[in-house]
Length: 411
Image 1: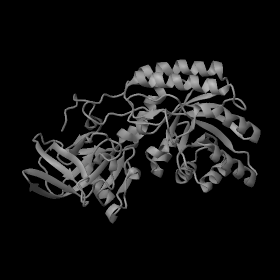
Image 2: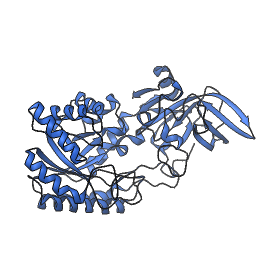
Image 3: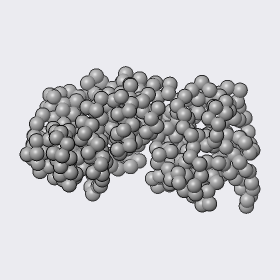
Image 4: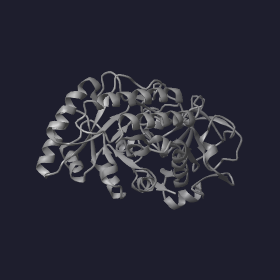
């Protein structure tokens, strides 16, 4: 077990009872018995509440906090989060239904993503949520849906900026992108929105994700606000919101350091004032997903075999990349690195053995931990993968080799 004064290791966020990790106040072995199976994901509602509380305390008043449902769309979790944030952002028709089932006011729900289907567009128009436009063709489809339903669609323009968020885990803006409308093309789209009589809401401008450097977030957010203000000069009506996305990262690996929110919050206060001055009817929105739920979740699988090959020890588990693609290193990692792992029923054991933790799939890509130091383990032990609250189950190829689905619990 990593010491609590190491890098911001996720073990430090969890309690330990009699050598067992606990989550949500429940010992891991007892939780596994309640769930009735491995593998499973478990999410700690108290941790999520604490993270939202921290954000609400540090973010300046007048800055709205939205949850990006794509990070974790588990209905019980979305319902828990929805009661504490100012709005939800969805990326599919199913996520839209989850958001509405959570009791969220449709006026505080937005839908972003390229390639929205005709059915999704009609759902969104009928529900009265804000659709973030991604193309001119999508605009035509929204116009058509509005006419057919006799509804005035609410729209915002998702802008592909001419800059990116440096040092991001994934770039979502700048240069050629499938996301949004190039900033230079936005004025023509705004003119068409006005001619169509659509209910214009504002802008969604998001440059990158998973960033741990406050100074780079501050720089990108300032550029984002200035771009929105410049584009607003050609808007068909008052700008009611400027969604600057998020990009707040969480630490996954030993060289990572937790994001310092304080300089980001100070800069956001200045941006709030800038928006209030230039766009007096607009709300400034920060949209976060991973940062809210990522550290509050664990993935638990069971060791089913232990074997030695070529002088290396392999712990074979009943879980793997089909259920946690990100932890296998196949979800955008340029260089594969181990997610933090533990043997959840041997937390008090200081001994270490170098092992490989693998899953049951017929591919060498099914690797959860490569040459990782863990306490001596045997069949029946519980492997815990931390930082698993975001982009876990729903980002994974669960049909690969047709294994049973893992369970999910909010504790």
